[in-house]
Amino acid sequence: MIHQHPLAYLLGLEGVALLRAFAGRHDEEFVAARLAEIRSLLDRADELGPGGPAAELTAAEAYESWAPAYDRPGNQLLDIEGPIVRSLLDELPTGVAVDAACGTGRHASYLAERGFSVVGVDVSPEMLAVARSKVPAGAFVQGDLAALPLPDDGADLVVCALALSHVPDLKPVFAEFARVLRPGGSLVVSDPRGRLGDVGLPIVVTGPDGRPGYLANRSRPASEYLAVALPLGFEVRHCEEPLRPSPFVGPDGVPPGAPGAAPPPAPRGTPPNIWSLHPLIPDAANAAYEGSPMAIVWRFQLTS
Image (cartoon, rainbow, N blue to C red; front, side, top):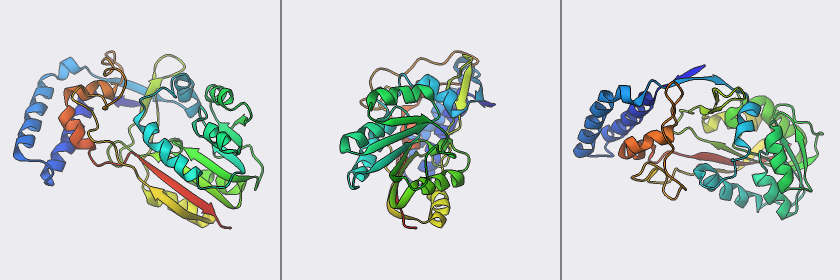
């Protein structure tokens, strides 16, 4: 169980913004504005509400509610991660590709268009149903990343996109990737970065019982991926950490170019939607998120 308070998030952003100013990125006027804004936020604490609790969900429970809307436009992370992953896939010869944690088939459909024979694995039946509709020729099975329901040495490529942040331990997952890949095969991995450095904010969503729940969203250092990949015989062929767009949010508190307005505040007694809070402090939000990585994207090759 977690408890998220809107004032805690807002003051956290103000604090990061002030630390960046302390390091020389912003001037005296900026600091004065942030301190005044903090006083105003403290005066409005009751107006912002108390926030609320959320219970931990499994990935299958969380993605059940996301499946219908996951592919809607306007997701900054998908818009930045997708082209980088596709550029890496374009470098590889076609063959058998496993899309591990395939979700709605974003990458599976691209692989099929490229001529790969696609096998998708995901824990969510709802996400798999969307993927099957996109890639009728693909084979899609329900399964876990730490126990892929696939034979040894059967794949030329494994793709795992934006899923490992939900996994508590990378070691068994990378061992599975190595098991299903043929020697010389490639592994393309993307993972989200925490919004504020190593702070992987939990993703709050409505659970199956209708109450707020959250999915863990870890932000790992690059060394953690290397520590599990290298002993298994993987060698690094590419690593990239794209930065968040600047400005992170516009004057209205939403990402530039994003469809629609900021969402309304969450009901009292529930965790806040952080995107509804950004309009209250857009300058601090931009300063806090400035220059932070949005994702990490790897291409490994299995050499043994």
